[in-house]
Length: 446
Image 1: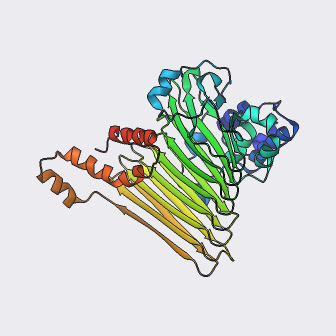
Image 2: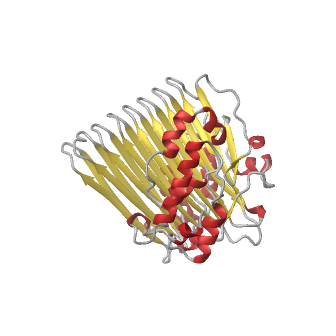
Image 3: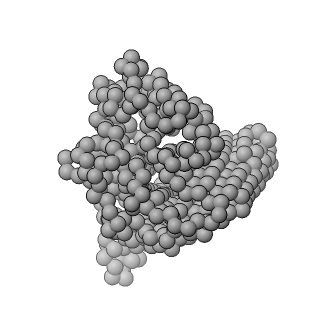
């Protein structure tokens, strides 16, 4: 990228050198349409810069530490410490297809696809760009980015996952996408994986995203900037789970964009445990009537962690249903954010939309920022939103202590009782057991 473009970003000198100069290759690989899309996205970053605290949807996330990193691009052929033993120790065995990515690059030796039903495609994105251009080109080259992180992913994504189901195809076993950050290269790396999931009419699948990592001595931090696009045709059904358990030196930025056709069903369960700063932005737009959406999230920032959940649900057509339930447990000086926005547009009569956020604050230094919002321009709708921020019930603590339960154990029992509702919603038993085990290891004593 030329120097005059990088000067227009308004970043610090270090961030310009670290993000633009080092990450943008002079010769962008790929088909001509993708090369053009990547260069356009990179120019967009140069012209608009990255969001700041003045941008309403970014006011709670501190971007300074991320933009100050002298990031390096992750090499596809770099040596890695990730092996089957590491994956077995950190990932639930879901039994189905598994694609593994290390620092954003596909690792076929650690992956398995196995036998899929006819009409089901599960590929790494680099291979899919050749075989499935007609599906990918509108996704990867369409529309203006909302922010510079989306544009940066569009410009820099080296690989990712592609899932496509033909009409009436059902994949019975979960499709597991495992993203690992390995800092053994000795530099602050940027991983920019991309996910595209297209389900045709009356098809069905379960997709699980797992984000984990390995730190290395002397590495300041690294960054994951992942973008996922989901397109559901009429009567398609997708269950999406995401477990974010990155290392404490990782900055995790994620965007999920969903379009739902008529009578489609989309369910998401997200669990935020790791990363220094983690932000998940989920945007759902109904484009067909009688579609249903369920968004469930659990976030547990501790220490100095920031966990930011930003959501936008766009009821653009009549008779659709959306339900959101997010619970946060905040300890240490952790900060949890729920920034939920539901738009019910004119003509979207018959909408049923409900939004709930509950937070449990365990320490004086922890902070919960909750902002549920409804904007309604239609008649004959059912819509509610609400939030709550509280502490452990002293009477419940006293009750447990009076029965001989130590104070530390009593606190943990009450915390686990608070989040049990969320773990119970995870239908996949191996994943539910893994999340429960990770929560059991978590200290809520500060």
